Image (cartoon, rainbow, N blue to C red; front, side, top):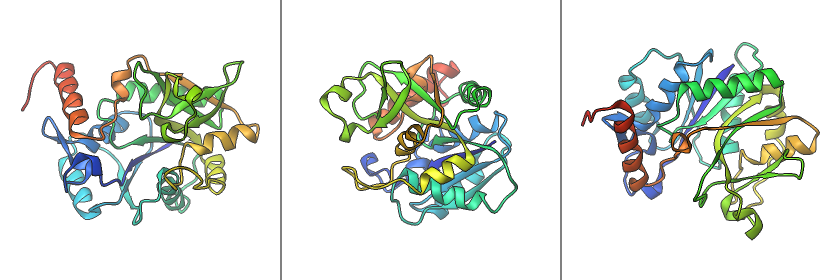
Length: 254
């Protein structure tokens, strides 16, 4: 299994020219927390998708990682959505040795634990699913994609907040943007993703509905602590995550 870290965004809501992956928490770039967590799982290597100020992002990550990690960078020159970023990484991986699965994480989730990532891997491998999602129950799901299930409790699709109906907005189970995929099935589904949404972007989340409609198995695991999958989109969320890291470590290194 290989891993992909999606870290190409500018982070407009951060209100800074600093690339989003390089914003600091306790003195460390945000993306490093994710890469270091992945490095402690059973992935053979890590592909980091970079975009905005890619040269600076590559240099900073390379010079500041605190644990050994086998990784490489792939550049997304134009940010057209998470499915587009994933496609670029998949194309790069196709030139390498064969493998069966890929673990995908966002680059802005600094509290994510290696243990949780390993659990996602294990559920995915044991179930032989096309896709396995990490989901979370949150009291205030605004901004998150919602997990839409049928009456039997099976996942049908993920709907982004901007595109959700009133009924879907009432759902508290959300997508964390952490997934495991069968590599070949993911590559095939990505070619079918369209940009017919409010953002006119290629959503990776649309792959789930494509797989379900084709009769492929989609499973999930729910994270025990929703704080672990908090994303960072603005300075307020950055500060909240830093406080949680300080609490987790038991000291303030600042």
